[in-house]
Image (cartoon, rainbow, N blue to C red):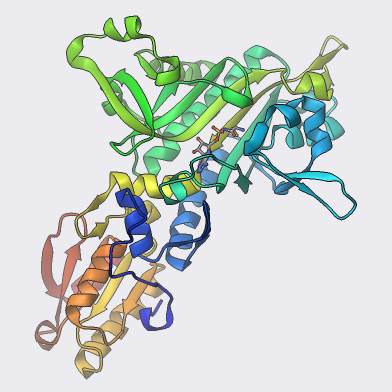
Length: 440
Ligand code: 5CA
């Protein structure tokens, strides 16, 4: 991508409305724009990051056996009347009428709709287990939308829903998502700790929030500090192994970890003082097992091996991609801007032409840009005629992990500089060596 033909509306000044660093940097780097309170456009740079986050989420959901579909944002009130949540959900739900005066709503979550899909076609235990997910916009009319897309009214959610014949089988489905979440957040460059959590309007008794420790987090959390160094389940984790996944769950719940709603002061005080971590955190995922809370009122049942009908046991599993992007920034930035983990960076490499219009610089940059693009890298080529200082500031601000800098003096020697955004380390090398480093 040539920067001269791209769209990154950088802000020079610090936006006043932004209270936390991620919001400030997302606005300054031209990633998002607020359209009305708590409702955002994702501009091209932001959209690239969001897409990469979603690709990782999707990959890990698929690995764990969940199946993607797409459900609409608008839902009929009738479905929610069946479950009893239409009245219970309160003012957070945006209620709309269509031209026939039929009550509709902008979905804040999809338990009812997915249960409806399930009951209309699944009749036998032989079709279980089943886990269906989508990545879709949601709307919750939050009292206090704030911190940009961290807590917005319209936001994206990956929501998965599992269906099983028995509680025991449902626990295995829960464990699959539990392990998938550990892997997902790790691939996003984050350390998320599962903590016992309140279930709120979703319901049920078994629930974990996945929390990233950050001073700007909205939740108050308490946990054993060893969680910070626990091993993440590997790529070859067998998601069909009941014992294997139970062992992962047991290990990751063996020490104290709870959100403030579930906090037990006495149990926390039993943790040796030096091991206690009392901190603030960002909830990036939340998983629930709620048994037959929706399947009973909505009549979602299957025939069991005993020939009888059974209400299915369900769970739901949410991740907030539009919250994850600022959460990643909270965890990874410096005074100059964002530092993207390679896995979600909007571009892999930025090529900075320090003197656009200079034949040798132009030729060198074109050569590098073509070679790296051909090798499948996402390359941003800063071919604008901005001052070198502006280009460096932009590259640092938008956080691309690697900068290849071509200035007239180095280029005259057949060389460029390669800068690591994270460490700031700079290396001078031949043009060929710079290309080979990223192509090999
Ligand atoms: N149906 C369940 C699980 S699929 C559910 O709705 N869970 S939730 O309410 O906990 O939301 C799931 C995830 O969505 C949260 O962990 C959070 O990452 C994200 N999320 C929730 N509300 C917001 C919001 N207002 N802004 C941004 N992200 C949000």
